[in-house]
Amino acid sequence: CPAPLAAMPPPFWQRLRRCRLAGLVAAATALGGGDAQPTLPPVIRVDGQQWRIRNGAPTSSFWAVQEVEFHATSTCDDQKRGAPLASSSVGSSPSGSHDMSLAFDGLARRGLLTAWWADCGADGCGALEQWIGQDYEASEYQMKCVRVFQAEELGHFTTIIVLERWNGSGWAHEQTFPGAYGGFFLNLPVIPLAKWRLLPPPAPP
Image 1 (cartoon, one colour):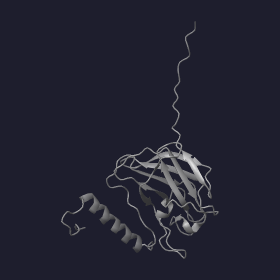
Image 2 (cartoon, rainbow, N blue to C red):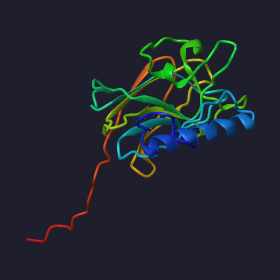
Image 3 (spheres, one colour):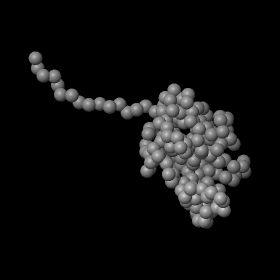
Image 4 (cartoon, one colour):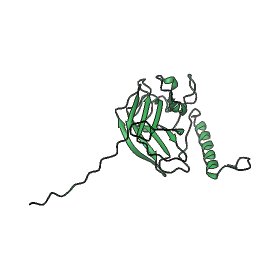
């Protein structure tokens, strides 16, 4: 992929990312997935610069999310904003585009028309098949709460939400939240795993 015509070309890794994205889009179009919007894994990212949620349980139709917020406090009052990322998006439908930006526009309204739609076909999304999150570029965070507003329509929300972070080389599991539902904001604090150890019994007197 040649460098763009400019006095100061962008860094190599940015050009590489652009080339790979163009290749993915071309491949998706060739496979008949022209409406999907593929998202690259990080090229240069360190631990904590990307966070995402996944559908831990299958859905009978496409997964639809109204809003997602990532917070650096367990009380969900320190939202961090970044660039949207998603496994896929529906770019064309009778109701228009439903890209990943709709999940981060700050408009928590009920109804499918204002939600991000995962592009997982007529049979629904398989467990852990789809994800949506944010890229924080030069900032590293340890998220301690995620707020999720899923669509309330039956078949369009997952009952299990999985939180993951990019650890510099791959996606690492942070926490699984069962019992999820749609139609309302869910405040999901990240609870550190308790640590236990066994001690020998006390010596007899």
